[in-house]
Image (cartoon, rainbow, N blue to C red):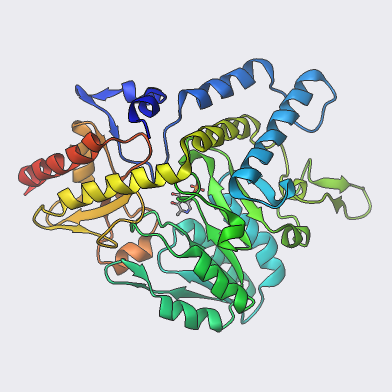
Amino acid sequence: MDMTTIRGQFPFLHEAVNGHPLAYLDNAASSQKPERVIRRMARFLESEYANVHRGVHLLSERATAAYEDARSVLAEFLGAGCLEEIVFTRGTTEAVNLLANSWGVKNIGPGDTILLTEMEHHSNLLPWQHLAGRVGAKVEFVPVLENGAVLDMDAARVLIAGRPKLFAFVQIPNTLGLENPASELCWLASEAGVTTFVDAAQSVGHRPVDVREIGCDFLACSAHKMCGPSGIGALWGRAELLAEMPPWQYGGEMVDRAHYDRPATFREPPARFEAGTPPIIEAVGWAEAVRFLNEVGTEAVREHSVALANLAAEQIREIPGLRIFGPGVRESGIVTFSIEGVHAHDVAFFANERGIALRAGHHCAQPLMRKLGSPSSSRASFYLYNSREEAEALAGILRDAVAFFR
Ligand SMILES: Cc1ncc(COP(=O)(O)O)c(C=O)c1O
């Protein structure tokens, strides 16, 4: 990757904090946007914007074409079998809620098991716990081993062989710096006849992701974590599974025929699951982000982010009392750590004063962080526009923070 060209495309890099150049290491929470995504959205608003699917006038036709083009760009990016397999949502969280309220309500009943892992984001935990409570199902978890270094694959085999109704798991957790073997897990599940959902919020746009290669039944992602705007994400599902799922939100656009005196009938997917005015401007921005990432290459993005995370981890590991969660060698761009005697929020405030944006807290994974004995921790997460200098600066600032607070 040519770093000068890539960094030149991100306007936020002109920002400074207290005279320090801004090093944005909070990419697991949300990514920054390249100039071309910002411009594309502005241009769309200037001369192409209207509501979609409804009008026969010029702007509505332009807007509909741009919105549907976004669907096909994303379908190709994810390796979907057809356009109808892409359902736009507000993000990964909404995609999981859609799946739980539609597929889940139809297919999961009393006594059934929903299998998750211990490393799920709340987005892939709470909707399933809520569903289980509603229908009388139970939730089981594949454990995480060794300080969060690896998923317990032996336990996964046993639990999958127990034939849960669904195995929903994260590909790249937002905390541990590891990557789960998604294809292997899906293969084990499909051999046992278990339906699979992959939370790919941290992996799409961060590594190559192909739904057919993974072999899952459903997968979700969010635009804002991959150079696109907030407010949009997608649920990908196998066409034959989506076709059998009932709606979960009701209103305009998703209906085929509505009556005063009898129940409505509904459209085929994806329209059935896109009630109301969709995130139109966001879809257009997302398509531009995907085009940008295709040009850079998602394998190059992965290698770059993982290399920076390993560089940072090697340097900060030397700091006395610092503990890094997850494997010794990083498998994603994420480094979560705690420092004995220094509160995670103090670390983040201190780093911010010197221009480094970190995240502190439970990272929406409270049960996991409690299990690891650190309810609050700091996280540095790297993406394609981060530099070696930024990764190296982190260690110096953490050393200063330790000297200041201890
Ligand atoms: C692993 C994982 N899953 C799901 C989500 C939820 O994504 P969103 O907030 O875009 O719905 C996140 C966000 O941080 C995440 O990291």
